[in-house]
Amino acid sequence: MVTKHYKNWNEIKTNDSWALFKIMSEFVYGYERMSEIGPCVSVFGSARMKPGDKYYELATKVSNKIVEKGFGVITGGGPGIMEAGNKGAYEGGGTSVGLNIDLPFEQHDNPYIDRDKNLEFDYFFVRKVMFVKYSQGFVVMPGGFGTLDELFEAITLIQTKKIDEFPIILVGKEFWSGLIDWIKSTLSENFKTVSPSDLDLIHLVDTEDEVANILDQFYSKFNLSPNF
Image (cartoon, rainbow, N blue to C red; front, side):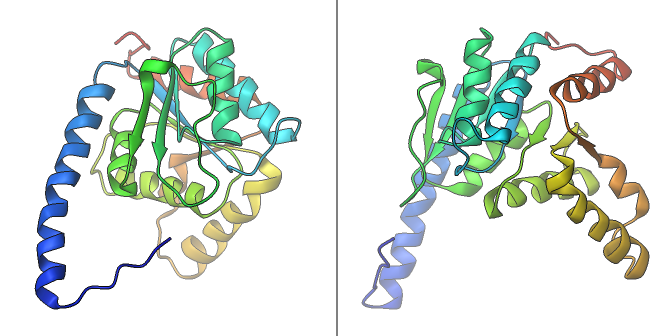
């Protein structure tokens, strides 16, 4: 990434002001495109997983099961788990959406995104709004900082009632159990920085069928279905 060097403070202020128009245009672009897509579930995870890896293959099965239930699949549009998510949706005949971001490494379009549903963003925060606003659930596979960022943003927004509740499903107990145990013991019990009920927002599973069951149970509770 190239660092910009400004000559003076006025140049910084001028560039910041003009950036607002680019930001607004990305929001308008995202809202208009995503509002036409229909109910979807977002699938997150590492860009570094390769075909043949355990969680790449599981993400493909999970996404295939999601489209069987009538939802589309939204991913970050890149390689790894994102590719696996789009692949599962594509092979299942469902809607396959990619929200791409311009990055200096790791990110490139994967071939399983529907051609008319491949969106490009420059700003992470605009892209994150699209994930949250247009998802009926988050399925979180093993991943790195970006995956954790998306996970905790969603939990925070639901916890603070800034958005309506939707299922947050962590797939891979061997990967996520340590984090959940730390949240329970350190944050909830020892330091009391989160409430025990906050953990009810999170589901921890190992299989694609468990993911599908959680989505079914959640939306049957509200008398909703994927064609709502």
